[in-house]
Each structure stands twice: as C-alpha cells, then as structure tokens.
Image 1 (cartoon, one colour):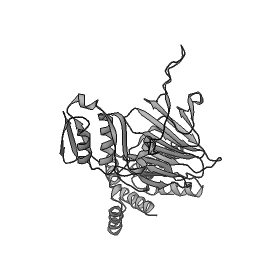
Image 2 (tube, rainbow, N blue to C red):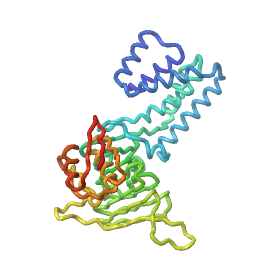
Image 3 (cartoon, rainbow, N blue to C red):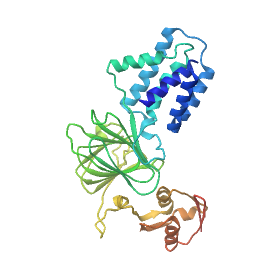
Image 4 (cartoon, rainbow, N blue to C red):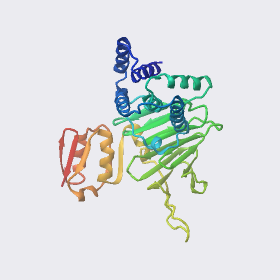
Length: 366
C-alpha cells in the first residue's frame, strides 16, 4: 500500500536513517501524490521543535494516545470539524486527507523519537494484528458547474449541486449508513430497515429508511431546507427526540439559524422555530426546489443577493454589490444554458443595473 510505504520512509527520514536510494523513492511517491506535500512541511516543523530525549515508555504512551484519539474521531465521525469540513476542488470519490491525519498523530510520536523511528510501525502492526479497524473518510466534492451523480456503497444515489460535498466512512455499510453534507444534494436512498440512513447537516440529523429527498444547507446561509419527494423522513435537531419533525411527500422543512422556529411557543418554553410548507409542481410538473437536477437555476421572488450566491456556485465567480439597495431587489426566472454574461443581461430586463466582469469577479451597481 503506497500510503504505508510513504509513511515508513518518512519515519526513517525522521530518524535520520534514510539512504540516498530511499530518499529518491520517497520523492517519487510524493510526486505521484502532490496533495500530501503539506504533511512533509508539517514533519519538518515538528522535527525543528521536538524534545531531545524521552524514555521508551513515554514514547510508546504518546503514540498510543495520539492513535487512540484520531481513531475515536474517525470511527465516531461526530465532531463539528467532520460535519463542516470544506470540500476540495475535485469531482470524484477520493480517500480523504483524514486518512493522513490518522498518521499525523503517529508522526507526533515519531518526532519525539531520536533513534527509534520504527516504534510507531510496531504499534500499528499490533493494532492490525488485534483486528482494530480504523475508518477512513471518503469524500465527493463539486466546486461549481452542472450537478454530479455518485453511487454510495449501499447502492443509494446522490446528486450534488454546485459548491457541495459529502463525506462518509469507509465502513459505511457495516454499521450505520451516515453521510455528512455541506451544500445541497438530492438523495435516492436504497431501502434497508436494518440500517437507517442518516444525513448530518450542521446540528440537524435527517433519518430515512428508503426515500427521495433534497437537502440544502450551504455554509453561512443560516438555514437548512429539507424537501421530501417520496417516502418519509424524520428531521431531528441536537439529537433531541422532542425536537423531531416528520415530513410527508411534497413537504419542505426549513430550519432557521440551526434551530426550529415555532411561531407561538408556550410561555416558559424555549422558542423552537421551524417552517413546514407544501411544495407544488409548476405547470411543467417540476418542483422548483429540485429543478437544479436538470441543471436549471430557478428563482421565485428571490432577493438579488441570495440569487447572486447561487450564481457564484453555478458559474464559478465572485459577485460583489456596490449598491446595497440592489441586493434587495426581488427576481423571478429560470436559467438553463446561459453563461454568466447572458444571465446578467436577462436580469437587467427585470431590474436596471450595470455590471462589470474582471477575471472571475463580477461587480454590480445601479
């Protein structure tokens, strides 16, 4: 396995026990995986400040502590960092760099070792012999452009919208089927009563058995929308059963600022607010919330600044307003095959404004 070979060579480098031929082999491995170059820099930094000497017992203890900590985080997949980590600019399933973070914990132990650079390797071998499995995160990301489709290990289908990513563990079908979402995705979940399917978005969890639904949860937008097309889903916040909403087909739940919003909360009760509303197909039998699956950007009474964020993801640009009033203009329409210039020209027919495109930045003014 190349990752293990790379780490073995790095361990020798840290222990000052590397030959010229091994150094050449390490460089060749890193050239094949340039995305891991940052870890070399991290090792150099650790080496510069590492303690001069520690007892063998202290070294073993440090390695075990770092290993256990990373192992717990990877298997549990419950930390906020895992739920909100940003997607990299790729359009295919890849082994997440979290796998390398697993080894980074061991490298911290290596950095404290002056002459025993293979101590971590012996510990890893013990873990493997004991049958201790460490989950590896896999990730699918779509920076911008047309929707992207992927098949999960259980046969469920996920379509990603622009500016979105999902993460799941390598042992996905062995335990709970859990996915962490940033952005927007449409799920067609394979039915399996024994293994519920969970989608984590911020502090909201969507639980399904087999169904089709859309989730929109872009970072910094302060809202999470779940639109159910078929089947049934339960939406829960902060793991509290009393904060659970069940949706039926053609219903949409909006969680505002990561809390349910109830218009009139009983006195003495915390105001948990949410909005549940029906979604209806338009005359063309298409539901607006999932129009993006056909590579359409549909908007209805949408403020210009909110539409601009969606256009940024679709066209891979940055849009800046020089006029605050322009941000609040409400717009209606649908974009299909328009490029950014044509789309802006269409919007100019609805509300007067000027635009200037400089490289990948669009400046808007009245």
